[in-house]
Image (cartoon, rainbow, N blue to C red; front, side):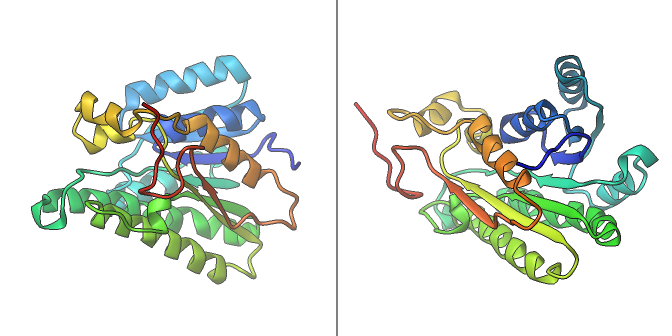
Length: 257
């Protein structure tokens, strides 16, 4: 197991769910972390809690990954002690709606594409040159089982996660001679804020997604991320797919009465 102590880890979408779990998991291993998201007050609370619990350095700032100029300016202006990023966790992402394509709201498509695809591209594009210059780095993208199989009423969300899968594979090829590792973690049902966002805060619809089964948690996914990040230098875990024990595919789930 490779030590993460003193490594600098950049995590997007770190105020809840998988991103938040990753922040705590890396801090527990002694890494110094850069966390960002759109909710600055909550982000700063998490940063202070992590400092107290794990005695590591934490740098937090507000960031909307959909905004290319904001992404580039924020990352290019990082303080000197924070600009040598060792590990990038592209976690920021969301789903909006669960409608048939012809009944969907195109505004939802814009938000998913701008966050899940373009946001990942912007952040990676801003951070990767430093990794290439140092000939060292690891990019871990948080994908989804929706990146491997489509399902009804999820055309655009599935398309964005298929894009993450394609970008990950192509990026691994492009950086093959740069000593850069590129991985993707593709979970199935994870009980986070994801479903609340998808259903615009409708708690009943969100709870129904996980009814009758025990879903994955953000911490389960963070465990897989840590596994990827701690392999020996000659090992690249290209992809991990995680499913709840009662989930066989994106659409086949066994729910107990």
